[in-house]
Length: 114
Image (cartoon, rainbow, N blue to C red; front, top):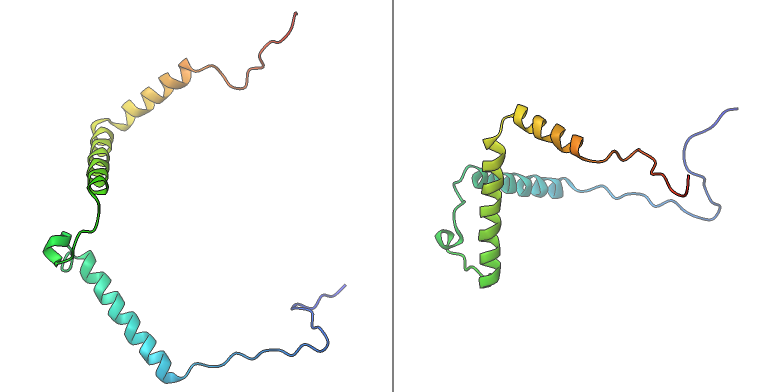
């Protein structure tokens, strides 16, 4: 058997042709992309970064949101410090101890009288 690729064509349905973009539109798009890439590059390198107050932007967060963000930063730092505190060998040893203390999940429990 031989198969021909592609969609099935329905009778009475006309195909829509795609309109080509003008060269002027493409140039504007490229210019927009390059501007956006430059701004993100500057932000990555710290030229445009900093706190909102340094950039002159108002901080519209509530007290609870600010406190939440601060707590999350602290927790993240604590987790990083815990991870950096142990060696790989210590982590593997703890993991093996944990597995040894667990009941084995694939054992079939005995049910019933007998």
